Image 1: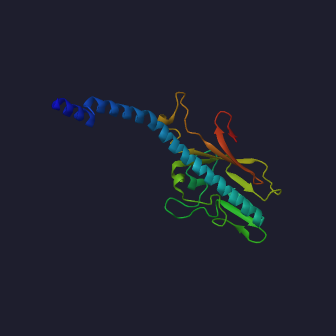
Image 2: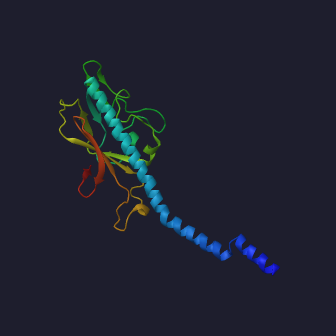
Image 3: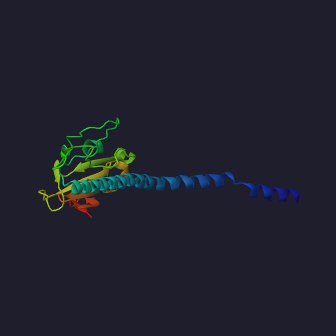
Length: 207
């Protein structure tokens, strides 16, 4: 009777080897199924965060353009090519130095004359960590921004933001398309700014 009591207490005290193996297998399968989704969510979050940085920077630039009554010419250097943010939008380089201060943007008004960066900039918060995980493309190599009602630029500039991992095979669906969304920010010459998701089928920014 004493032996049976001790045996029951021993069984209640821990798991058997089979039970531990079952638990291990369940955890492993759970991680296998959930890990790709977690990675995808993290990479999409990096894209979405930088999209907000781009939009915020453009709002700040447009506000300064309106305040100083400036007309700004922006030179992206290329169009329809995905590159690192510091090659297209930001002045701050990976080394910490600043580049393209006068080549990238030039804003002119009657009081200051013509001024480049960093007084005028496209991104207010440069050097943020998310920039290392994304690529940028613009629909035009040049663009002009002026105060509302004075713009000579009738077309719209579209800035695309995608993950550097966009084309990884592990992140594609059965049709071969990336599961990661490309975000877009659009700005008109008069400063109307909006963001959305880029449709590769229609080649439009879906607001």
